[in-house]
Length: 174
Image (cartoon, rainbow, N blue to C red; front, side):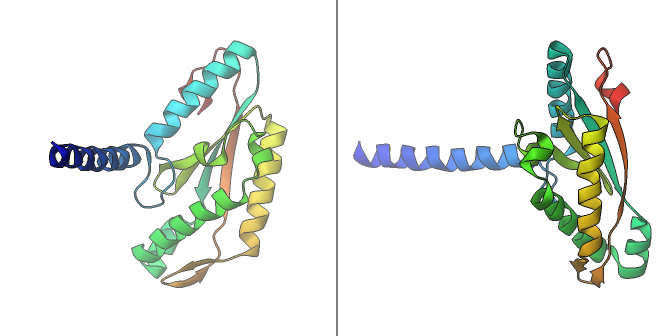
């Protein structure tokens, strides 16, 4: 009976680890480690519902790495992958809790939307607040090259910002 209990406990622990891994794969981008589009759309819908219910603000930013095709063409796809990973880490490190107003963790509000596009959700933020956040992020990117297998690369970004209006759907905001 003792051996059976120990075996069951070990299998339960193995299943818990496997379940955690499956949940990680379902919600995170494999290349960058940040949240994936599916997860971000769920968070966007939750934040949209909150903003609508309480008539509060929500800014949505789509970040696009500038000239990413050129990085892949000139330095190779591995360098492009390195640039995406490095960019993702940089954003997570440079988003201040204040940028998401302390009400949502930055790591749950940022992720890869697709290709070289990323989505940043800023609950409780206005367009002006989002502009300030993105200005700080762009300035910090200019100060530091991204280190890749193809050497150091200066990565810049362009961004689109929208502020949720009561009654809009998530797709309308995007």
